Each structure stands twice: as structure tokens, then as C-alpha cells.
Length: 272
Image (cartoon, rainbow, N blue to C red):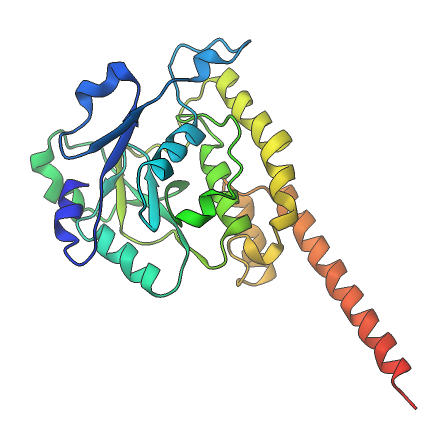
């Protein structure tokens, strides 16, 4: 991130962090520490967690409260940026996009030192279906529904992605670009069942019902593909849910049928 920041000479990039007080010593010197987190999953009654995982809403609220940047970027801590990352992001923003979702490339975990970054950057890597890097206009965050979703657990990516799908006017999914990398070839790592169900239940019971009125079939990824191509891609993508896709497509067809019927009515009434 530091290298990418240094190379983004035509745009201003601030590297910002929030953490728990005990984690302050590991915050890099080239990051500005905004504030300390005060709550975690350990504070949720009935959850037996061993890791002090924070809530995404606390991180993003601290971000908007401490910067007036027009565009915000949330990136998982284990994501490696290409040196040209911020310059490419700025170029897409200049094209009129108010949000970007960027997929990483999986790199074999053969490298151990920052001195080996050029070797990592040179690797094409393998694709990864998960979403772990989000760029969005700060006005969108005011509309996001984040509830009690925690980091380091599945459904964090689905939560952020579906908020972008619902509220962005012109998001762009960059799922085949060579912009970010991750050391490790795994796609579906082992998960804590209790934390998984906490996030899953929060997403399906609280977040998705609130977002549904703003979601359409055209807003979900792959809408421009053929029907079969679209359905296959959505079925295979772990961050998109088949039942939601079918529901929104059905609603779209019903809306089109209503429009057609109304056009027939108005046409008949308009005849002399």
C-alpha cells in the first residue's frame, strides 16, 4: 500500500487505520491511526468467541468521521496492492463509477519478505471469486446497512457487495483484473461455525430484507450475459445467492408483463 501510495502522484491517497488499543504497536508508521475500536464480537451476549473480531460498521464509521475524502476504500489487511492500484482506481472513478468491487489474484505462498514484493507483483496468479476490496463514494456509506457483521468471517463480503449493488448508481465489478493479490491458494478456508452463523443470520434476517427494495436483477453482477451465462456465474459465485437472483429475475419479468399489459390497455383506449 505504501508503494502504491507513492506512485499515485496525480491523486491524494491517505492510508488510514483503526484498531484495538493493544494492536497499536503493529500499525505501520506510514498509516494514520484514526481512533481505537471499543467493541467486538466478545461483547455480544451468547457468542462464545476466542478472537476479538471487530464490527465493520465501527471501522467505516470511524473512516467517515475522520476524513473528508470523496472516495473511500476498504481493503482486507492481507491484500497486496499492485503499485499502480490507486492510479487505476482513480481512472475508473474519472469514468463516472461511484463504486468498484475488486477481486484478488491468488499467489502461491512462497514469499516471506517485503523485499520479494517485485516477485509477487510479477505473478499472474489464479482468480478468486470472493470480494475483499471495495471502493465507494462517501455518500453511499450513509445508505449502507451493516448491522452487527464482523470481520474475518464469511458474509462480510456479501454484506458490503449487496450494499453496493443496492445503492450504487454505476458500480463496476473488476473480477479479472490484476490489481490485488493474496498469498495463499485457498478459496474457502475453515470457518468458526458459531461466528459464521452469527454473520449469516444477521445478513439474511436483518440486512438483506432492508436492501431488497433497492435491488433488481439488473443491479446484480453478470446481468449483461445471456440468461444461461448469467445464471451459471451467479450460482458459482459464493457471494451471490441463487434464491435472490431467481426472485429478482421473476420480479423483473412480472414488471415487464405489467408494462406490456398496460401498454395494450392505453393503446386500446387511445383508438377512436
